[in-house]
Image (cartoon, rainbow, N blue to C red):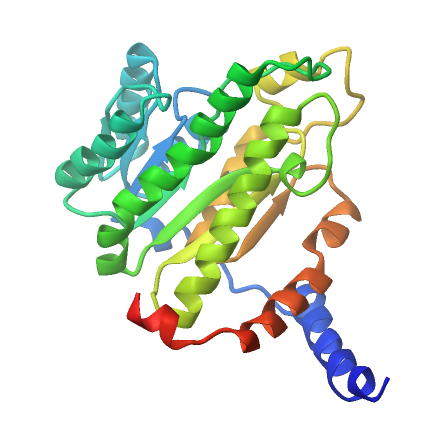
Length: 292
């Protein structure tokens, strides 16, 4: 009890004050002017809207998705909207070789990289899990492993620019969600991997920020089709969602919560977990982080 009174309760108070009462730094669109940004899953939905926002902010935009025709149109639109430059490379994130080589090609075209926004997912429907292991494997490969492959390939460039990795996730990656078990598993994996890597970077003084974006229901065509007749929830606009994701990355926030979440966003932030993560670092040999 004495330990809790002397140490844990003050720490809890500090964390709660930080998460709920600290003032956010002001976002300015010029933060992205001239920045070199990759957006994956950019042929439609949130990814397309992010590309358009970045173009209007004067960024160098590189987009990727499977549909070459859609990407051509988006690149043309980005140039009209004021992008410093706009490029695309089409391909599928089911192919890990493409995922890795895409980063190298994009870096050569852009001349470096300031922000990597990982947004792509494999298609999914909302239904009870019936043992389709192939779909579980594909979900993990596209929604999770390709994110790891691309972020690690981009890391040397991001270290040079003191850049940012932005990972688009979901409430299904923070809480159990029925009817989407494979999708949920891949989103939980993103939280586990990138939150761990963020801690490693913090201890090792690697100046690359990692922003995890936890989204509620967004009014993209694919999401609306998936939840039709299944889920009764209000959807948030994809245009605003895209802007909030970009803001979070530019401000180097650890997490962004967006959607019609209400009080749920405060519970999902889970300050208790953060306290335990902070306290657990005392048990590690810090030299292990520096030497590796």
